[in-house]
Image (cartoon, rainbow, N blue to C red; front, side, top):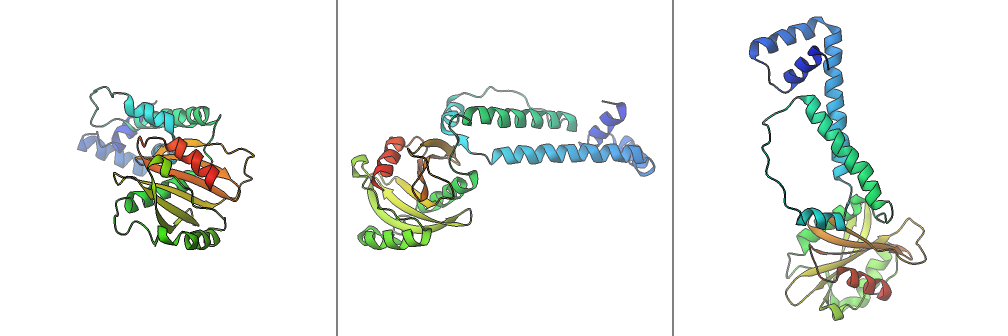
Length: 255
């Protein structure tokens, strides 16, 4: 890095004395080369930030989320500020680890859904799972209507699974939207009031002969998702929800 690059980096981070900063600004006004280098620094930082934020939107594999949660974080002093090249290098390293490492972790068993679909479902679940009286739009006493109404709206026929063996009682259903597509949300509750939901939307993929179940954690919820027949499915519950895999497998057989 040239002396000019170092100075411009410090200038962008607000680390220069006022007199030196003024001198840099005067040079930028007169020196197109210096201004071009400053523009390149800003563009590189913006690109790194954009790539980093895009990687944050990717779903976190369930096993990795559990490992991160169980690993204690070491205490370390964090500098108040750092040159732009330091931030850029750190962002690129994280992007490289997240990108290539993520493909390594997910390549053998990739999630069947996009982050947008699951993130939307997590947002809805966070709101509705806390409801008591208004948990659903249509109650369980109208199960036939739920199957007809939501099935025709979503564009995928289904049967409401029986999950009482897991201590879950079907409460009813509601219609939500994820990634711009209608989603059927079937709500179950256990004796302690914990809500587990089964959501489905019409798939655009060719379903596999045997469903592949994919585990992920997003926004404080655990997911098990798969594709079968006409639809993409996901079972969502709170973190560390017992038997979520078994619940998904039973739902897949019954739906």
